[in-house]
Length: 111
Length: 226
Image (cartoon, rainbow over all chains, first blue to last red; front, top):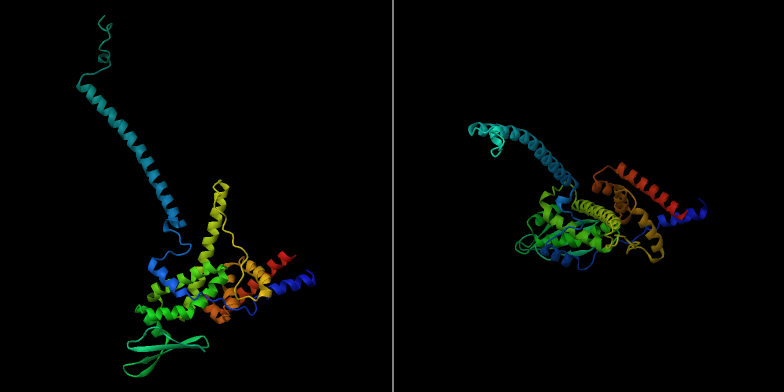
């Protein structure tokens, strides 16, 4: 880096030397009171729902609920199938419904 | 030395006036009833705040608003945002004064809240910018990106404004802790000891942060000018 560039950088770096302090507006207290009375909404405040930790927790809960529903659904289907078969068989036995009686209108049956 | 009367009594049946010596606020209360003067310390002022005394709150705001505003404007680099941040700082003070244990000075606590709030605003601004970029990618780009124009600090002399704007642009790219240390030391004129108290770290750590901040700024400026 040449001398001129170096001086330029030094000038920029020292540009805040002796800087005056910025002062708040004369009406600062009035505005502050008005904001406090109106109800305060912080700048850049995010709803807690939007925080990553809550969003991830909600996602995990949704996945777990889905998984629980799917697995319990599968077990129930097997049990229901067995139960249904039992019921059909018992009803069939009670009303003497067999394969032959299934074709009540089979005209060729007695022939 | 600036002497001022507080707008209302901090103590019952009394008139309170305050002045600062070496940045230390001193409160003197004159009791009308007993016709005696009483020196109030910061603890009594904090007690006034805890009791919900509006005059104590007004005193704190009037006495510290410029320091809070100057800190905030150095970090957020926008006057309107800095005023919003400063208001939030005092609202937080009003609401959480009961949690203030008095282990540090009131001014230290205020600086700490001011820097935290200012950095929160910067993070929120960055996430808005990112969200705006994503919106543009998906075609819903009506909302303009949150771009901050070059910042002109009101306390910088006219002949230095251009250079100061370049320096502020570089400061904005510093890591958070370096930015905080640099702002408190350079703009708010706090000593390394005071900065270390605000940042709850050691003086050596502040020295290191300042050294790295200056190095990083130099690199950025060299890159830009070269």
